[in-house]
Length: 152
Image 1: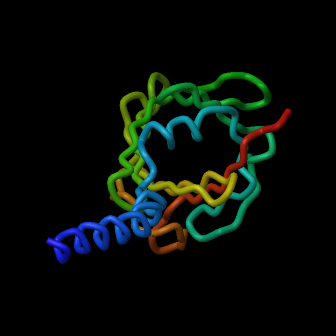
Image 2 (image 1 turned 180 degrees about the vertical axis):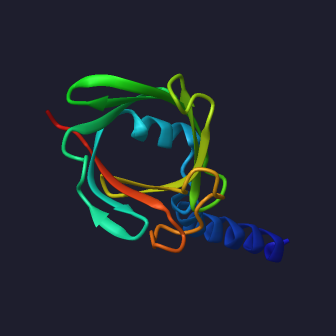
């Protein structure tokens, strides 16, 4: 009897020590990441096909509301897309589907992560498969964007 009681207390002690670690290592939920994505974003850095560029970045941003993205140029809404995310594995996946315009219905399969307050996302050249890394090179033709929420 004392051995069984001791075993129960020992198991409870191990759980009490390990439980906070298990909870801390849980992957973020889709709901939590969707909440973090909401807001108005602006690119800090673009790397396109391996080239670091600022061309066209200064006057562009996008807003995320629920699962909708609104692209903004010079303060005007210029395009819309919807998106889905999958956070069951890393890197997290995002599929962006354009609504209307010349890319209507086109889906770009991307990956994303957060680094503090930065939203880092990477997409393939249209028609290419989902990126496997957050590195853009001339060979893989990825579009890498490092974005931060706008404060103004």
